Length: 393
Ligand SMILES: [Zn+2]
Image 1 (spheres, rainbow, N blue to C red):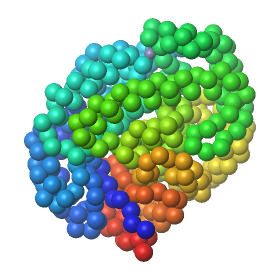
Image 2: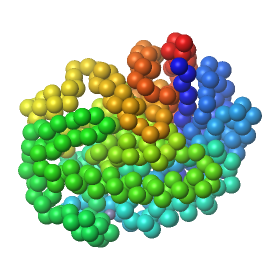
Image 3: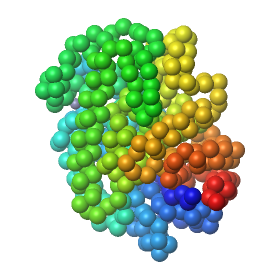
Image 4: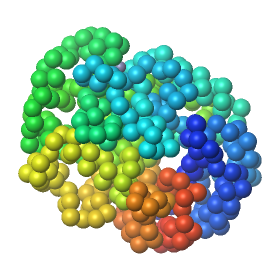
């Protein structure tokens, strides 16, 4: 079995300083000397020079070049977008200044937002010969967003902007019933009664599942439009998505979404304590739903997650990938963090080797070595290369 190998480069955010071509070239030289890379994903600093240099470097080596492009967050740093409104009628709050990225989400149901975001692509990136587009933040805000207790919950129980309220009414969705259902605590959190993989939860109160289903429908519909735009330009499309069990809370139905793209990359970041990292997002889910010790235990038991396993439960992660690979309409590329950022993503060779070895047998078709090659020590690149060599046979 052969695996598609993708590496990801974070060249800088829309507003912050960007990486230099020299830095990128040096890291690529090293990575390509070790790994048979099929695809490089890079974004999203606005500097066209970096993309032009990288594109001509990669085309000579017959390697695909995808632009890493955030959709429903980050863009409001550059333009006015219709905001995401929480169930209390207020703008959702973001993590903001603590990160390079702003994590301010706009409403994915607002079609003007989508058109403005696509216009930005046209203006800024359409002259660069990319092979494809890699769409990130194709979701709502998560439990981990917002500063301070309570804001993550309000980020998830959104959006209640005029467009969304109109949509809920058309769908006969009772907003007051939802507000009532989330006004008291349950155990396990949110009244979850079961989980069957691929983000499929059952809830005691069906109004909660109806709400997440509506949100997933909105994301799917917006993405259909966005993918049509890029496919008409002849670009390949990849999706960056949450781990399956976290995906419904941000409006992602992974199996449906897999029908819109050429490959899907669930972020199976078991060692990351930053947005999209599994331990980070799971802790936020439990914290924001006010889970006490008993509620937490009930959730772990119901999910079959062993919280004592560190980094995050490998056995559970394998099940997640197996279920997704079996149901996905497109190839699944497991997203693994190989970069090392102190206290945020402590990836070391033993973690990388074990993860690749075990994930290789789940039905996945590729590995997306994430999320920033520029922050990846050479020993991590070498160990990823060794591990991949061992599983190809
Ligand atoms: Zn809205």
